[in-house]
Image 1 (cartoon, rainbow, N blue to C red):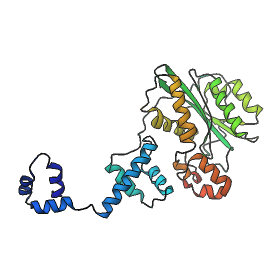
Image 2 (cartoon, rainbow, N blue to C red):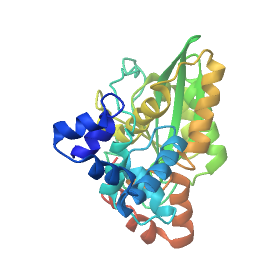
Image 3 (cartoon, one colour):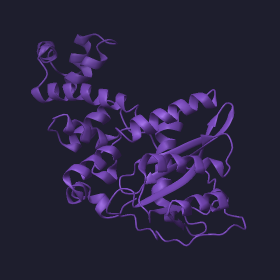
Length: 304
């Protein structure tokens, strides 16, 4: 639009010159320039302020689907396409995923459990299946290894541990936390990769003592543990991607905040109908399994 071009360039060139070149009247330009914004534009401006606040609250982790879900819960009746358009206008987007190296050491003589889970990622209730894995985080003091246990039903992190060394004690600490928090029933299925930490005698003994059934992925097949792999990809993008931790202690504090406050309690999960893991569990407990799963078509379809 010619008037809009003049408004941008008038700091560089005289308005009378711009109007003459573009063959518009100065009176017409000034009338346009002083006219109040259209109602739709005003609404978009107000929406943009709220979207920027939500995006900042998520620490730039939310894209348009999660921002739209947050607006909906706040009582805003607005379409997803409009949210996406306003976000583009403000230069807002979610952080992008990158490739990361694998840490699994499956070259060992320890006993391997069969793949009982067999990619059946749909479960009827909490504490039916837990999935677990280990990843790494870089600090200026060196590597820090993170072990987590996720409840497959709600994707909640039920146990986690950090260590400067990747030994069998690391996942055992995460398992101890999960058992203390959840007190699962006998027969819970526990799925991991074939890493030596999970195949160790100490870890397998801990599972047996608590009546937990052990399941392991096939060799070199990350899709057998897709939910845990997806969680770590999210952690790398939303937490570690732009982090520059001076010490391991600083990283520990931010991992605690991310898991306990943001991920479990606030972060909207696409596989849960854009509810947080704990909100999804509470809805299941109060409204019944049918209502909870109906709110999550992705979970009903078994998507990682």
